[in-house]
Image (cartoon, rainbow, N blue to C red; front, side, top):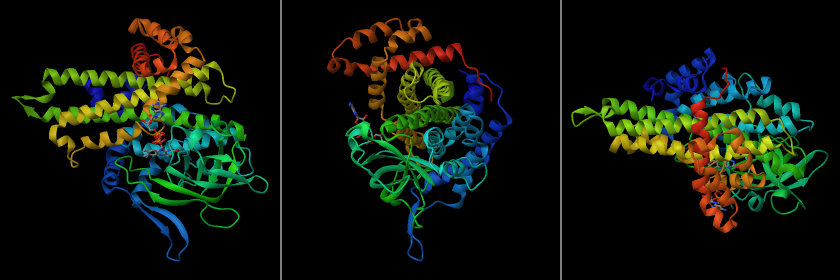
Length: 487
Ligand SMILES: Cc1cc2nc3c(=O)[nH]c(=O)nc-3n(C[C@H](O)[C@H](O)[C@H](O)COP(=O)(O)OP(=O)(O)OC[C@H]3O[C@@H](n4cnc5c(N)ncnc54)[C@H](O)[C@@H]3O)c2cc1C
């Protein structure tokens, strides 16, 4: 294990693992976080849930979120560094995700607004041809403050995994391009955003996922000035407090259809592709920060006459955790590379897209598991201090618990990944890309045997298999360092 890399911050890790000389932009962004961003982020986390101001002094509905002014300063840093603009102007996904890694090293909650803004921009850029296209894209692509923000609202009270059943928001046709939405979104992150992409069911659409379409909903009404969606309340969350998450009421809310209604579920998947890659990259960064803090603590904690950092059991576990994070990071960045090659595809997609989807499911669930494990072990290293709010260890765990759930839970990714693997016979393609048997000789035979079983017998076994697959691809990628990254 390279201690200088572990202690060197996010850019040192990126440059070592991805093999590039860091640009001034990345170094400056990290330096800003060290001196200014992180203290603000810590304060916002400690302040807890911001208040919701629903009415102006004149009694108008305004639904504004009461963050301290320093929040806007913190938020603007990523937008100013080009986390969205570089994608919009140059299709430079890599730089956006590199900036995301640095952001999430310090604050994965703050990476959410950038991620959902990018995930809003993508379907609008690719599929929305309405009259307000330039206006909406222009808002999200701004290079200077005030930055316009996006949001992606699918989940309703019935449950986020089963969108086909639980998206109950209804879309009614208005005049021309206009639609109106009626419904409630139960988890709505980056609430207050200028534009959101929202899952809704056009009146008369078929049941299930086929009947779910994607709409763009601006914050302000066009026809009768005022708020176009309402914030019922803000969620009181244990982590990710740098992004406001609320419940949204859509009441005769003006909306515009994105692309074709019957393809809505594909667009939603594309939205999720971006946020799942961001999640995978972000959790590795935050897990790395948890390990670095644990190591720093162990360097000055003296027990049984020696520093904890010198004790063999500690050193062994630190190396193991670091190695797993490296593999998880390799899987996340590999998935990002594949996203770069497929993100402009449209349905019907190529086999390459199916492979990307498999990677994205593996990366989302496994990176979150590895990072959570690292943060949990970090708490153990801090001992009793680890569960005291005045020490830094507990926040890592709180933040990472949420990143394990949003963008789809572990079981959802196991099931969806298995389904893609089965439908596209990817087990036949995988060995042409990675020498899986070099790491885990029985993995492919085990997958093939399980695929041949009836579903009721196969599904209980997939967690072990998919975990082995994720780890093997990550390990091979980390060992071979097959990246071509410049930054
Ligand atoms: C802080 C936060 C912010 C969020 N922000 C947003 C947002 O901005 N936009 C948005 O759309 N959503 C958002 N979400 C919602 C998030 O995407 C969902 O929480 C997530 O998709 C899971 O849905 P659920 O919580 O309803 O759990 P459920 O779907 O009810 O799942 C419950 C459990 O059942 C498991 N499960 C489901 N199906 C199966 C099966 N077949 N077999 C075995 N187990 C199964 C799941 O893995 C999970 O463990 C947010 C969530 C949080 C916590």
